[in-house]
Image 1 (cartoon, one colour):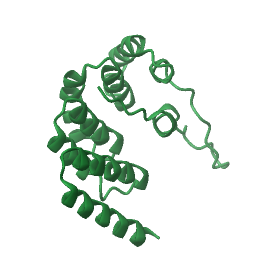
Image 2: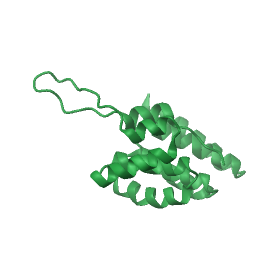
Image 3: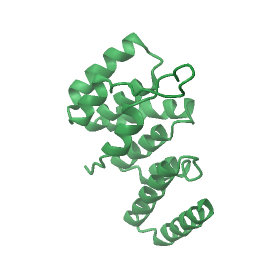
Length: 167
């Protein structure tokens, strides 16, 4: 099964978060990555799943730990379980494009190509241009795999037009 590693951007996006600004200074201090994030960065998916589950017991509302759980399940090739967990979470947190992207990745890994493209299509107009670009690229690749070159061309041209608008 094809695996796409999203280590660099995802580690920065999910592993570090800013603390509240210090009074009068306007500075933020990075918080150390969670145990689950560190284990995921080392491709230790079983251990990362245990760490994410333990963190979720302490704080069930943590979206980051839920995201780590999804990533660990994907790393263990438990894509259907990850998909079942990711879909409602992505719906509850539309401000998190990484969750919607993972829904598409799970669907892709399960061979559900139209559903993968549909999930990624929700990111095309995302304010986060990095995730929008990833979604366009993955959609285009998936459409080519399916032999839908005309749809791929339309997607590509649409993405170029969006990039030019952003400039």
